[in-house]
Length: 279
Image (cartoon, rainbow, N blue to C red; front, side):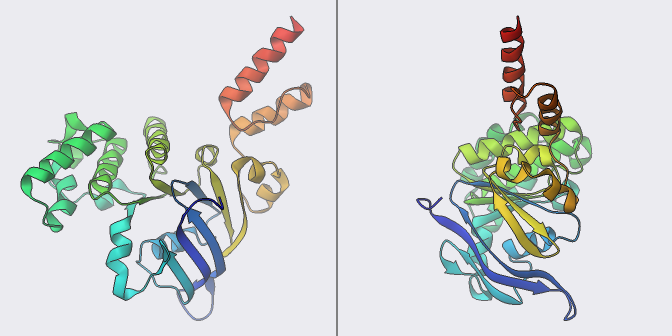
């Protein structure tokens, strides 16, 4: 990542909600332009606090957060909020408009965008996330996955460089989860920086880099294959391994030529290859 531009940098950041216990302890890391990063950890690890710091809801007790090289402070918090969009865990908590269309328009109207331009932007982002047919729908007529798509469209409408998903699939059914995870990859491929705070290890498989939190400390970071190869490490901090890898590990015990891969398509190809060789 040395040849990429840093978009977010935490430098020795600490935070506590009271003076007795730090929930983040001297955390340092960088996130780079067009990168898809997952932040994982058990409950109480500091993930949610990090989300609030990333979006300016909280201010560090110590240390500095940089956005595009600029130290974030109360004086430039608007710069942060213009560049970092957030999709929350519960889609109902961020639905403001009477209809999906009104919800997308809200942020644009606050920025005093001309009405004709608002209509153009709404049509564009609705098409990107596949909600053109529900723009006139009220919230109670939408599924959880549809509401999250509206939330994504609302964020895309203001065109931030960085999009933060804060446990955004945890309340969705399997189809809703699959759709949103697929869209995260699309956003990264379209040039956005994507950060996902998640418990879903199946999602983590597809990201570029993983940050592992434990009791307020950043204890490990690396590619998904680097993180998941240490099963004991994950068990020690109460994190699961993806089902695809668990299955590959079990099959590897039966046939050591089957690779312990993270991805289903690679595992299937590997199994088919072994079957062909045995035939």
